[in-house]
Image 1 (tube, rainbow over the protein chains, first blue to last red):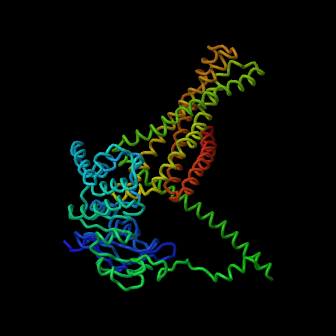
Image 2: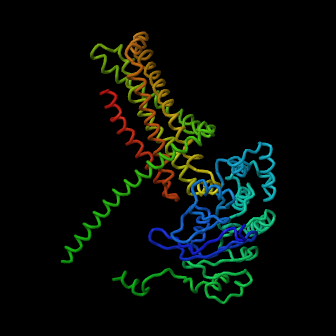
Length: 267
Length: 269
């Protein structure tokens, strides 16, 4: 058994002639909470899709549990995915199924467990995220924070080795954010899993992550523990961590000369 | 010189746009055929959970019943009125039953049912799958190692194929009832002549089986178009809206074109 459950080795990925990642290297040790951070459009979610085998790299490889993801057959990828759970940005709950059925979905699809056991397991998962009382509700009746917690319960339904979180804090109120934040750490430690968080919320991510990668311009711009990165003097990291308006990531989108553009229109 | 250059650039751009539109249509046709092939491949997996197909038969078939039956009733009544108006000039008003039945069983039943199905169930399928894609439900399913084609596409496909002939048969039956109510109690055509002429002149194989074959083919076409448009829709509100519109337009034109092709074969053979 390798020490790192996920390894990204010299990965490049692009589409429509635009390279999104160029030579990225990352490792995700077992049992740790590792965050991938970066601005919007920096390809953080794409990295999760590459780990999950939904996309194929242009160069390099992603290894999950020692197996190269893009070299697997469809069945092989599905076998690997059974070791993974993923919480999507807005939950991605099945809108035609109740909270209970959403959490039961992976169990019904991949196990032959009797109904009584599925019932107990679903309630245990929902209890872990504090929503046992909401098991009869439909997704349309949930708040954003509740939907995220149900998605988390569904992601851990089969006790995965890897749990991936795509922007778990986006659009949540402070209370829900705190709840989701502590749940990610608690569940990771309780299940002995490895968590990969994609986020741009610095405060919450730094609270729970063991290690952080910053992605910018297609490469790993910085990496380290939250403590190291908080003190970092690298301009990009400083701008990101402190939320400076201008810096290596400019406030203005690339444009021509401002004065000339105004005068041209008048002419 | 500048004018000629602009003309040349404009011409190149127009040609490029035409080429792009043509290649994109071909690409979509190929992608649609691929999805159809995959749907057939994954059908076995979906048949193992046949309750999903039954559920979809309810949503696509049972929920379309009202619009199908009300339309059929009025179509049958109009057919009887128009038919009587023409037939009485030739002293053949008793043949009204045959006219209504043949028009419905051979043509109007399968075709109008398919057009209504495309508008009611087809758009619902496209919008549902398009929204599932936009809200990452299909991606979530894939990440849970569950094939969306086996779990979402194939059950809806078979539900459409099962529901369409049943709806077309109901359309014809209700249409004949509508025609009867206008022809017999309202106009006063003899009831015995209405039914006996129909029984004597409607052929099982040439009329009923051919009509059923048409409705199965329309079921495959309409459902597959609706599924493909939803599956291929850009994951935005505008993308889903355009896909829904395309479902109605493409399905309607395909049904009318297929009707001509099938009728040609059926009359020739």
